[in-house]
Amino acid sequence: MQESSTTIQDQVSQDIGRFLQRHKDPRKGLTQLSAKTRIHTKTLKRLILKEHNPTYQTLYKLYSCLTGSADLGQMLNSAPELIQEKLKRTDPQLKSSPLHKYNVNVEHELIKDPCFSELYVLADTKPFDTKFVRGRFGEYGMEILQKMLQMNVLRVLESGRYALGSNRSTFSAEAIKAVGLRITEKYSKPARTDENYANYMNLFFESINESTYRRWLDIDVQAFQDKMRLLEDPSSRGSLPVFMFNVIDTLQELS
Image (cartoon, rainbow, N blue to C red; front, side, top):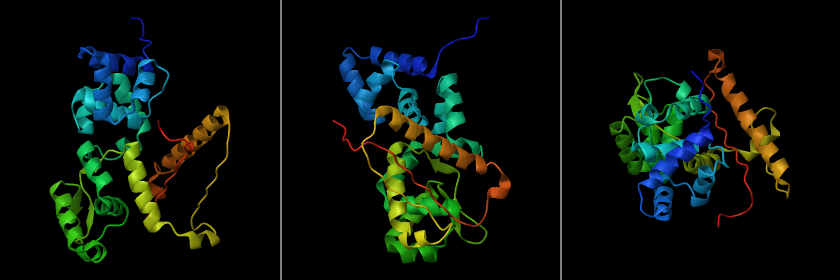
């Protein structure tokens, strides 16, 4: 049997094409797909023309819509094999416990509510008690705490503290930006840059060519993957709660 030579770009282009075929006016279909997936129409057109290699965040948004499922597990079971393979290979969350369920609806709460997002991050790194929640967020925080428990986003430990439960958030680029900005604003400590191995901050802006820009992106992708590989060793885990938030982008607004 001859091995299939279909690529990720081929698969995505075909699947978007099948979606558009269900509409009498493909342009309206593209606008509808853009609204449902939160992927810009220009990006969708590039995906159709196979000019763009989609990231796992793009695949989540696209196939959650195409498969009609907000649950990552159900979406994975319904998505084409090539898509499943790339998601499992590139999303670090999928290497955690198979009991975890990743849901776009949890992500929506994460994006819109600063209290929800901070408690979500802390529950995975620094479990907290009700005293902390009430002191930080007041009665509103207690309402969000109950909501997260009802959604199985949080679970109660034997110590009475709260940690992440079985229902987790997917992390689109929108969620990464929303949570990253909030956590950076709250927990980054400029004064500690004077201490060795306390933290790291940088900011740089310049006009560069397309080739250099792409090399910058490749370097940061590789650095992130190297950091994730360190965590595959169980001895790397400890009691120090940390975060990293990294962005490279152009100083151009979307038209």
